[in-house]
Length: 608
Image (cartoon, rainbow, N blue to C red; front, top):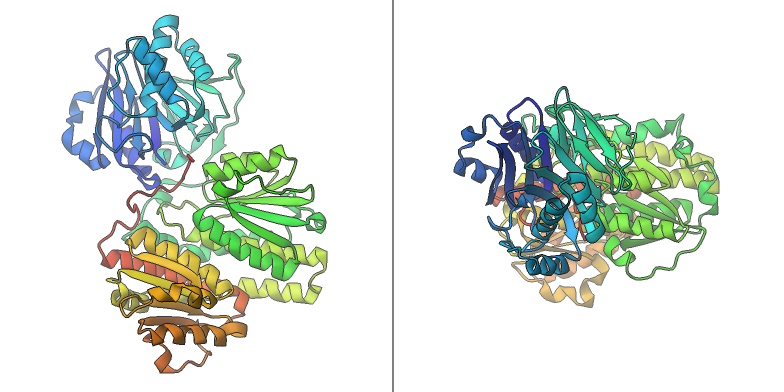
């Protein structure tokens, strides 16, 4: 959510800021702005809308001599999307951009009004900007002013700042919200994530909580709150600029669906030792799970749906009880945690605010924590006791596809590792299941190649006002993720229900203009699912059935059918989800929706 870019160096600052902000569009935003030094002044340009709207309105040629600036894409939290509420905020003396939420901004605003300050916006950020200006006037020193601000504000924040009397320096600080410093040749940067900087550098350092970065063209100095210099590790990103491009695909989402075969193998193959999975080199010794009484999977959105598959795998193979919680509920419901429990956090970005808070809650209670993340050096990756990296690569489309795919695969592999040493499966069975999972790799691309068939089905359902996904067992877990994908990007109202629950109320909504997609790939319960399909057909619903090719099905049970390879039930989600990802994608395309940047959504939800 939101994006920050800052630049100081030898290039035109406007070019770097606009390019960097455009690379952060995937995070979600509704307005944009930049501040630049020009003729001993800080000048700000900002507007509601897209980056292209700002570029079309502003003559940036007049800023050609500016080599220092900060920029921001805003996702509204306090105050509606508008020109006035857009960042940066400040005064003639200071300008700042902010990601996060200031919890006590109302009290700060009231105090600043009493001191004679006037406010133009409804944002929490402007309150911080006025406070910074006030202390800068008092202290006449940026660091002293910043430290006083830190004493007064509460909440989560990443700040990029400029001071008119220090035109050759940028300042940055973070507390709970992500921020990094990019390191170039005779130039340096600040950014919310590395995607913004890949055109210019792959070298960066991560700011820890309450560290202040003083950034010039030639140097970066990091201080703690005691104004002591902090030694920082320089990291090198393993992505390149090409990774952040569509590479011939019309949308990032379609590109990322096509990247799933590679991501699957990159995630699983490094964990293979012979014909078994081995996580012992990732701080998970062989008998680690023998002492685990319960696993609490905590995540949000798509990651939570992967966690639900993980629950199925851990309970089926390792016989460990698993609870799955929405992170925003887990942290506030006073969960029952015991010393032999494990809290497992799943987050693509590693910065999801509620998931990070849940992790900290577990750690504060002395509970073992494990995280599955996709971003090296993210907050969750740094704070969890054990970190398992997925190797999905950069995911830019707001609607997650390949991250979900590899999270699910990694959870399956981890459950088999646990089952081996808990001896809940024979060694021969573990080996057989490992091979079954690895064999999925041969079936991913053939599913992607069904895209024309899936597009045809999407064209038949694209005008539905509402749509239901149903399934049982693992098919229900896939239905949940499939429904989320469809409503995220196509704006078609969609719900997922266990097929057996339909008659307990939901079936009252099934009519001839409410289609149903039935996922029926579990052999042991497919007959029961077929009975439920017949129930919705009796209500004249149009039905698409997704099933194994060897499952017999009378033509009067469905309107459309899509056949999948007949694999073992527990790995069927890895082929059925590709079909429903493509279904959501083509439905959105046919409806003319912005597939990669759906309205009101953000890729990385870094505030509560």
